[in-house]
Length: 307
Image 1: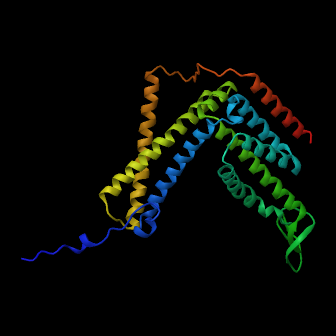
Image 2 (image 1 turned 30 degrees about the vertical axis):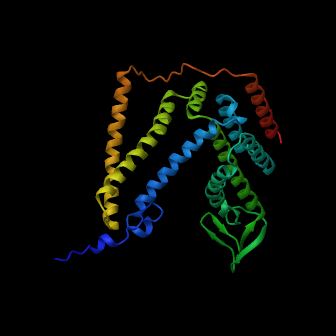
Image 3 (image 1 turned 60 degrees about the vertical axis):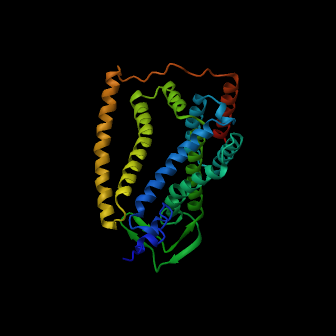
């Protein structure tokens, strides 16, 4: 009797990965979601690395950096001219350089978020329908002006100089706020930020919520990855509808598991004597360098206020 090897054993298997999942399976969006979680974990790990580099801002006390962040966020919010906003952006750039941060990665995130949440949101305000002013770029002409309830539509609709200035100012505010926040986050370990907030009399409940949420992100990502790998090891291929139903069911499962985990953690904290107070036993002593740097940043902020 002649034996033949089945064709499926002779065929070369397809390489399946998160990058080629779009052509290999209809359920590729699950792999893409897992890949995004991996990027989140990697980003946080990079933050840990940059926070321990031998840079200028990394060596400062966390309390100085948190006060610097709050002080300059207030300055960014109250200034109405463009020059102080540009000056703050230049100061943050210099601090990022001397802190040895990856400028491409740093400003890549800042500019993208600033473009989405600053420029695109403020873009309609450059029209004379929203902000009155002199039209410098006409877009369209109507036969006559219209009055719709409380809204006045002029005969010529276009971009005004005042509107452009408002868009640029709001975009710079968003970019500066993001760059200040990322500068402190990338140069300060997370526990040090919590300690600094504690010294500023931030309520303990708020600190607990931040800390537990930060920790649970990694637990959630690992649980999600384990569920996906278990499903993938047992099922060769599923259609899109079945994949969506499975994802919806896993979301409900993770919600129940999250609730149970929160209750278990809280009961464990009560069993160990937790009474609602967050106590830190070790604080870094501020050095002369911290006071000099803090005084310089504070003086720079005062100078920007009076500009």
